[in-house]
Image (cartoon, rainbow, N blue to C red; front, side):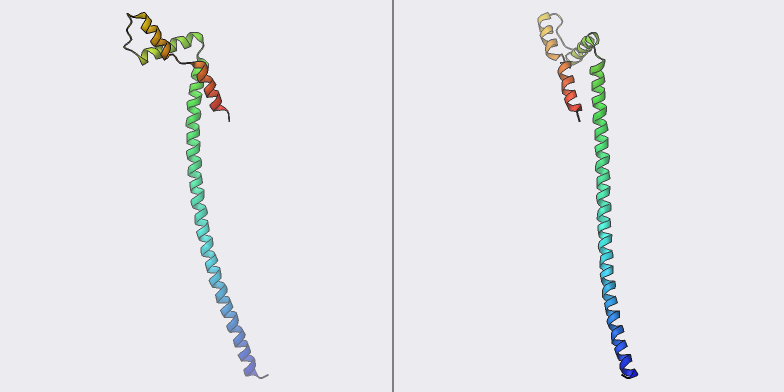
Length: 129
C-alpha cells in the first residue's frame, strides 16, 4: 500500500465520519427542539395547574368562611336568642304585616320562621369531607 492509497482511505474514512457527525448534529438539534417544546408544554400545564389550585383554594376558603359564619350563627343561637332573631327576620321579610288581624299575623310568622334544626343538619352534611 502506497502513501497515496493510505491518504485516500483516510480521506474516505474522514468523509464518512464527518457525514455521520453532521447527521448526529441534526438529530441532536431536533431533539433539543422537541425538549424545548415539551418544556414549554410543561410550563404551560404547571401554570394552568397553579391557576386551578389558586382558584380552588379561593373558592374553598370562601365556602369555608360562609359555612363558619352560618355555623357560628346556628351555634350561638339558643332558645331565647333564636326566638328574637326569628322575630327580627320575620319583620324584615314582611314589614307590611297587618297588626290588626292577629290570625293572619300568626299564619304568616309561622310560614317565615327558619327551621334552624333542619338547616344545621344540612350544613353538617355539607361539612363532612
